[in-house]
Image (cartoon, rainbow, N blue to C red; front, top):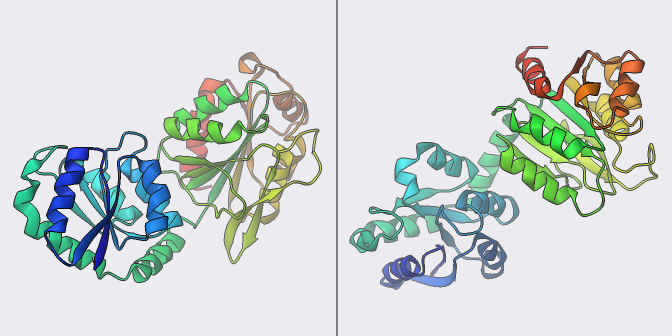
Length: 342
């Protein structure tokens, strides 16, 4: 018996898909969900053989569901959506993330004529149920190691007072794809960094998340240091990994920009770019020194656009800044560094 879980925001379409699949004695519909978050909770509990996943869901997109599912609970997934016929980039993205096939809704989100494609749908479900997901994962991991994990540049952005707005301004104006990894350290009270990372990801051209212990760095991605932890980078088996550190405060703060910058300077073999933005104190000064010793670049926000000219001033006074720029000009300068060969 092939167990199928249906993720579809329309109750009517849930019934249509379920009715089609149930006509075959070898297929059993073992669960349904309207919401992406509900699907992510239920699928690991039920362990279906195949998941049919709609791209358009009320809470989070099917693409986001697919990405998290393949990362945390790899499953055979078939995308089923009106969008997949018309949106080639979305189709390719889903395939990149691990979807095995597509079943287009022929007449839009509510496609009662899906019944006309019963044989094709059942045939695809049966074929996909036999695919060795472990083999697919091995291929995907190998490709990932060859592509996403070969990082040539790391950008470290540090800020304190006035930083959330300044960081958002920079991130919103960066293009994708980027060959670089972005490490973001914002002095912020406990509980706020996850929401901050989510907001940055919404406005960014690439994915940004709150860093987790042992996260492996990928290019074209950003990681926000969580409140209460220093974000330290380590090199393990030729990969760069995050270690969250609860040791003593540095410069009266945790996370500390200095801690991240110095750890990157210690282990990273590629180009390092430090960006010091508005904030009190001098966090980032020792880190900037370490980056300069590795022939890295330092960009500093100027006084006129800084809410508090403390952290940037410390860099300028120690003659460590390659450029001192208004906030609006920093994204352009960053792009120049990132697109250059060194």
